[in-house]
Image 1 (tube, rainbow over the protein chains, first blue to last red):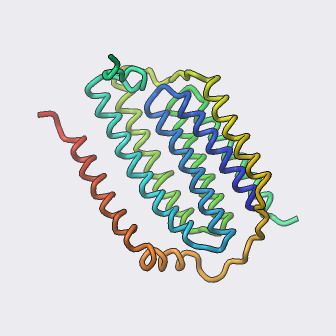
Image 2: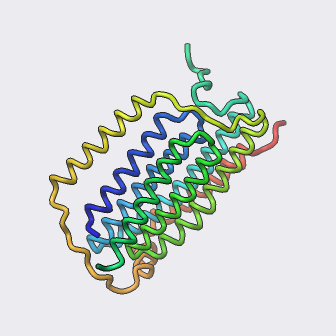
Image 3: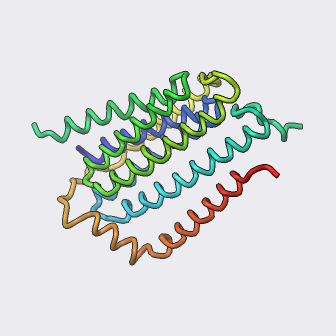
Length: 99
Length: 164
C-alpha cells in the first residue's frame, strides 16, 4: 500500500476522534476520543518512519505511547477524584469557575 | 494479487468502524470495548508496516493497560450513582462540521503534495535499530521519559490518598 493510503486512514481516524471529543458529554468519553486522535498520530509516525527508511519516527512512537498511557492514567485518576468531590462525571456540570 | 492490500483494507474497515462505534454508541462501557478493538486493529496496522515491536507494546500498554483503567474508572463513577451507564452527546452538528472540514482539508493537502515515495525494503532488524537509537541518539529524551513516568506515579499516588 502507498504512504497516501496510510495517511488517509490516519486522517479519518483523527477526525473521528475529534468528533468524539467535541460531542461527548462524559469526561471518560472525551478521554476515549483523545485516545483515538493520539492513535492516529502514531499511525502517521510509523508510516512515515517506514516509508522514509528513518527509524526516528518509530522511536518517537515509543515516546508517544508511554506519555499517552501516563496521561490517561492521570486523567482517569482526576475524573475519579472530581467524581468523589462533585458526584458527577459530566464535563458540563463542572462549572465552578463560571461567574 | 498479493495479500498485503487485502490485509490493509480489512484492517482499515475494522479500525474505522470500531472507532466510529467508540464515538457514537450510547453505552459508555461498549464504547471502551470498541476502543479495545480499535487499538488492536491499530496494532495490526503497525504489523503491516513491519513494526513488530510497536505492535507488541501497543497491545500491552493500550489494549491491556488503558482499557483496564478506563473500565475501572467507569465502574467507579457510574455504578455508585446507579445504572446510568448511558451517555448522551451534544453539539453533534458542530462536531460534524468541524471534523468534516478538517478531514476535507487534510485530504486536499494529501492530493496536492507529492507523496509517491516507494516503500523501501526492510534492511536489518527494525527492533534492534529502535533500541540502538533509543540508547544513543535519543538517550536524553529516554531518561526524561523515566522522570515523567515517576512524576505520573507520584501524582497518581497523591490523588489516590485516603481522605483525612
